Image (cartoon, rainbow, N blue to C red):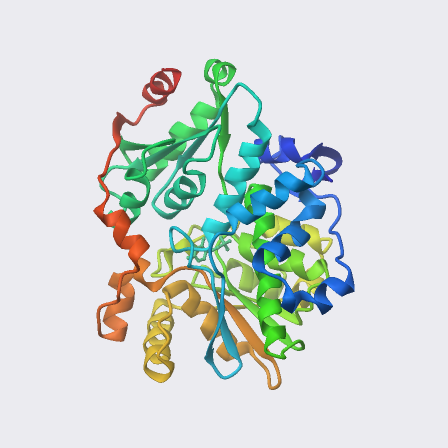
Length: 431
Ligand SMILES: *Cc1c(COP(=O)(O)O)cnc(C)c1O
């Protein structure tokens, strides 16, 4: 399959180019030249298929034969090494629990896939790929863990000294092997500037293959379609197959874009709901047809604090930029921190289910948006123990920390100290 840029439909690139470049030269985002429609027999029998089988069938049209089918099958099996269960929270409302991966957040899925896809591209080549990633916390941990011990790839995580939480820091400074943590004497913006300048540095790029693991990369986006199909499979196994509404807590809108792609591939979802915090640029667009990006505002669901969602252009592209069509496909709801706190408290008290602040916005949007006869699935994108300072006061008790998170906390923290200049980064990488 070929891929075009959202800024120019007629200049197409192959999979390898799209993945290695990430962003198109004209600053557009890559899109598949067509969205394949899966055979009805796939859906009729989907309840009997495993997560890995579904993953392979759904992604094969995009990634094969650029990646040979046998290699791709092994890659899918290796990437999807954790469960993604559907759990009933209350009547007709189900959580799709995406937090059973290594860093307890849904970004594990995309990061694990991207690492293995890149690794496949470099296998047999002399040059290794060097991933540079600036992080304010969560991206660094998902990328570092997703790429951990993947052959042919080195990861350099730049993070601002003293400005990420202890749990987040432990998740990328304790791994070692092919993961190097760089503690920058500066802010997140400094880290991001250093990475950007490194990508533009001629000498550095002649010597090393440098790539970003940014969330706009197709190799992170497309694999997220898998779990929408897997959620449907699990509902079908319970005898539910109609009037399914999927609700996605959204920041950069990559996750929901993958859901919309799944629907275009034939997945029978009746409609989508996008839930946001007070950064409600897209819900406002859905209502008014006007897209007005704004500086992001800080909230307790901070992975969704985005004022100009990067994947919004992909959603427009999917529906020919027609507001009327987009607003028929997606409904938007937005919530304040107070709303989010209330629903975490209430859902624990009434149903014994502890939501994280992101999943909580989506649960609330189902409560507000679900109509009689519909069944709702909301994406629970992170484990609540990732946000103890927000969740614990609402539920009035300490949360049990899952073992894999405890294991990180016991690890030894190792990082390279660096002043916030690209010269220092360059000198380090050239060695
Ligand atoms: C990144 C993130 C989101 C938002 O996902 P997008 O694809 O950017 O819309 C939601 N919840 C959590 C926990 C996240 O880490």
